[in-house]
Length: 315
Image 1: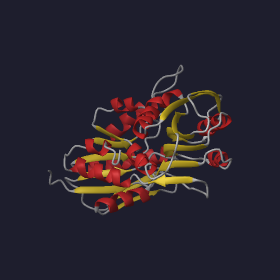
Image 2 (image 1 turned 45 degrees about the vertical axis):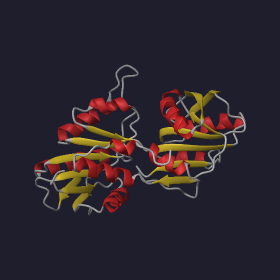
Image 3 (image 1 turned 60 degrees about the vertical axis):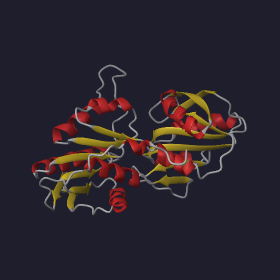
Image 4 (image 1 turned 180 degrees about the vertical axis):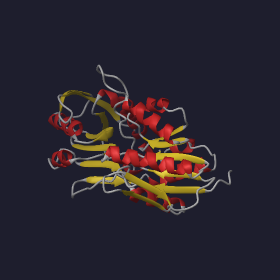
């Protein structure tokens, strides 16, 4: 155990989640001013003593992504200059994660650049959830605690009476995640082969697996335009799927996504509050990851293992 005092602060990206995390573990949210100058520059002032503290800064890098990322870097720098003993960046949704490799000439590896910026700003540790690629952890030269939202999804799905379930990945890259879901839920496994025609348009080409008369669960880590999900749902419905649910860790939905979801192809979109989300009367179920993140923060603070957080109750 450690006597290091625990301090939790929030940026402006998802203050509601930060407040819920603090409420779940009985720790008050720290007093900090996070604002902007008239020209758009971010300003941060920590309004309490954090000298020698174990400080946690909760900030998802959701839209406006660059603004929230810069705000997080400034908060970390402020804590470093205020002599915090340890600084942990709690990033429920890690933006730029899809730019994790050079897949064409003369493009950056921005996920690595973000890791460098966080370390240079003064972060000693990162706590995040459902990275687009797990190897992003290797971009850091500091400890990274990578949690999964799947236990939260499993606990919810256990309350639903779903018969003849089959888990589908909407693309090849998500097969490992889909396989894990299928194993835990005792379901069959399938794949939708897709072709991306633009950044916002996807065409589903074919499916692998039995779907006729089945209840389908699509699993993915992130959706913005819902193009992949609706393209997969279209071909699955055409092949006789009885119902289609989607479990997506991070829903960074834009207007195009909401319009597509209005089409009714997805019977239920299940997601987390890693980023702020509006349901707008659509069948969107938002599950809270606050207790999971809160418990992880407590365990890190007391130098305990976080391994047990990966265990799934009731399965």
